[in-house]
Amino acid sequence: MAGGFLMEIRRGTQSALLVIRASAEDPGTPVEVSVSADSLEVRSSGSCAPAALPAGVRLAPSSCRGLRRLPGDGLHLRVRLRRPPPPADLAFTLRESLKPHKKYVFYCQSCGDIIVKDRKFLRVLPLPSENWNDLVEEWCCHPNPFARSTLRPQHDDCFLGDTFFMLNSGNESHVPESLTCCSETGHHASQSGFNLKSKENTRVICKRCKKMLGETISSDTIKYYVTEVIIQPSEGSFSPIPRSQFVQSMVAQCLLELSSAKSTFRFTVKGDNGKTYILIWLLNSDTLLVESLGSSSSLSVLTLFGDIFMPSSGPVGTWNAVKVLYQPCIKCRNKDFADAWENDMGVHPLKFPSETCLELLLMLGLSTASLPPSLRCMNSFQIIYHVSTAYSFSGLALRKKF
Image (cartoon, rainbow, N blue to C red; front, side, top):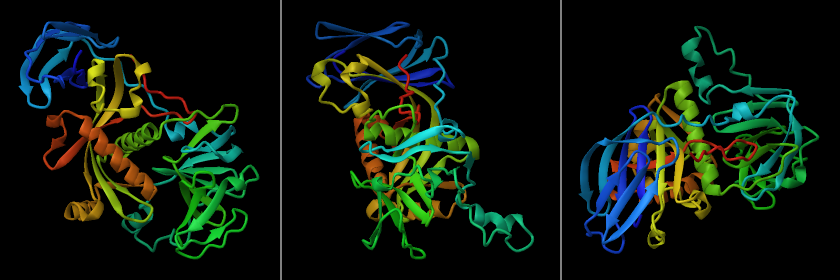
């Protein structure tokens, strides 16, 4: 298929939007499209390019409607599905992947260096939301009973937050040579001898690649961000995952878990420096995306999932995804909007390392640019699809090819 196609399928409505991308060589060439239950066929300039749909995706050809041609996009049409598409894969969440009484190895996601070796947890416990203490006064008619208490993991505990997990660093399984800690003032200290000042932001840095992995909360407590560390059972081995894939999958997983648990659909992405980088609005989570690269002549065009769509994936790729709207907030962009969301109790903050926030913003921009122009914006927001079937912490991709 000369220009390839993109199909957005909604499981809830059993309907699909099909965009057949315009040919880069001659976008004005007449095109004839044939839709069958399990394939698409495009005829143009005497050539015929069929494309088989993934198994499990079956269209109802008689329901095709709204055929139109948009400059820069190609052909648009809507079609219903003959039967529901396969259900979304159940992604392993952090809470499900970490089990008590099992040994795990923690790796730096960026370089694969071992951070924590053969760690066994006796308890794996979820933390309340980060602003829980601020709401205590609304719950209690007497002074805050938790004012002087802090939630800290004990020996062989693992506490799970929305975007991080917290460990007690006093375990002998910890590998101190893999970490060096430095504050924003440039002070360096070894893992065995912390010299922490009150209110000092102390970062945990991978010694090999210098990537920020987390923060020290106290002299014996470390917080690791889920976007920076891969966890595998001790009997497994490290499997590298492209950075873009991993970050987008983990962010999508956070959005899905929080929207399901807290019924919140608006999020602010904040850095460890306290700055807001991105505003995110979760639009839907029942999307199945089907994308075809088309012929080799169209490979210079950005594809929706970039490094996820490799030639080995075959001519057609299929992903479970969440559709989100977003606004960048760097360099004082959308400041009024960001301030309004900051004061809205219905907006949930997601905290990641500042460098990861910038990485994510770049990924979002590139993915938005890969969409047909008519699908890139909604009102003042930009549109992006996140691959939502996340990676398990055993390092295996749970993204399913149908």
